[in-house]
Length: 69
Picture 1 (cartoon, rainbow, N blue to C red):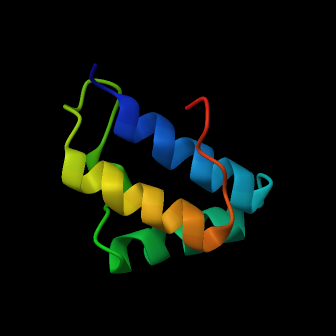
Picture 2 (cartoon, one colour; picture 1 turned 120 degrees about the vertical axis):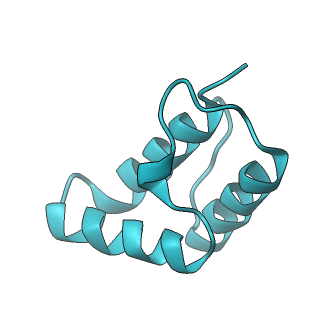
Picture 3 (tube, rainbow, N blue to C red; picture 1 turned 90 degrees about the vertical axis):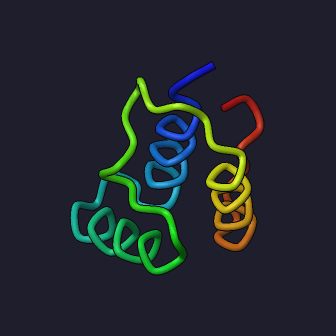
């Protein structure tokens, strides 16, 4: 199933930012520093297990639940 990475990124950013544009930009930058470049992924991107694991770690660190994503 492709596009899961994009869904995970969107969910993490949505949960943490509450649609605050300044926070969205900051969170994108923090993800880049952690090895995930959000702009690189879209709905047709293949699911990379390494990136998905990084996103799970980021979500856990930031207190975001990815269940159901």
